[in-house]
Image 1 (cartoon, protein in one colour):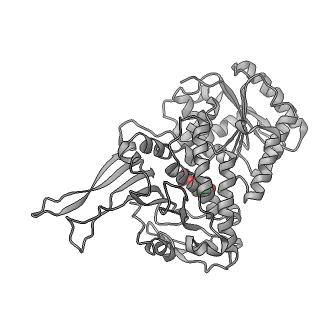
Image 2 (image 1 turned 45 degrees about the vertical axis):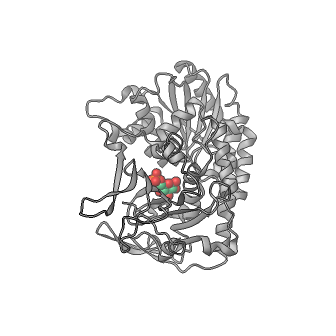
Image 3 (image 1 turned 90 degrees about the vertical axis):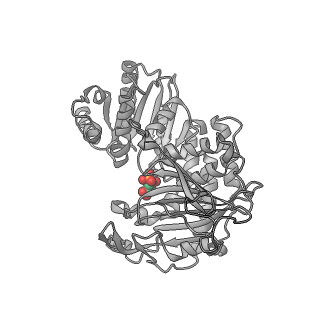
Length: 489
Ligand code: BG6
């Protein structure tokens, strides 16, 4: 693989995302030799730091990753700081000077990545100023990386997109959905398209339903203010959950090129049955956590987390049934669920196959087990296939068995953090695992009608205990179709 040459400019360099994800990821990329001496980083933010103060913070952010005998100095020496007031022209000029100096020093071929690790209300303005004040004029490539939330609904996302597009073309914009950087999310395509046993059965003739869960045991933490405006549907479903669904449902792309993969995903979003607001209760369940117990610890309800949350109608849990109205998937429900303060932190996909037409081997009381393909996204990364095989008891009984492969148990293997992969992809110009505007727009249109339906009725919150797998209605959603959620353990 070629080594990237680039100058990375991180706006919001003193913020949480940069500290928790970006610097440790860049550190790992350097340590693995995936980026070398032709990459340098400028941190841009409001705080009046100098290069040394900045490097000190970067050092703190990677301290957990550092081996005791490892010197971080060479790594830290490529970090530079520029105080920036994002509204002020002079700031961009100073930044531009630093960019030009460092490009020469690091021989980066004029390649520039602008990473906006900050609140979305600034995206449009910064993108336009980067353009207006000449930071895009370069002989190399220029790319803009933006984080979610990408809008609050379709209208605001559209507005934001128009603003950003005034300065950058679609193929220069890298919209991060960090789930697309997860090893096992990327593995969905490989498992589907490199295995005849799945590839041939991957349709409504053989699959009865697909379940996608991403549960968290944490509550809203310090982000309550943002979260309360957002809720689980906007925070998780519009992006991560629907992206996983698209990868599970899409047709095989002609090649693995970015445009081919994206165009297949976009078709899934187009085929997703839009839920009419007055029918929302048939398809979607929302929840908000009450007090409860997690890992032996008592925790408060969502509304008790902060006085501003009292009386809140924001959902901290969503379960939904989604139909893809196309030839392959007609009639197959895709169930999704996600929430805060659930029993545990896990992300998992279960593909449930239809049973054999007749049951020869099981007693009536313990019914035939369907075959399941389970893709464990996190914390374990692996694949498990649930089969039926002969039991060693007398007679011809069958019993369920599991074939499992666990990735992180392979010695010496470490799955690259999602951000590592995405940063490297962006430097190498591979936008496959970033979301195209059409995907964003179609998923907002879908979520908007769900939220519109919810707005018409006041929810009865709180409705699930912390430490459980959500409200009863989330279980009933499947039971009325003759299914149940498969356990996440
Ligand atoms: C983020 C959401 O996009 O994803 C958070 O804003 C959520 O609320 C997080 O906690 C979950 O990501 P992961 O990788 O921990 O499953």
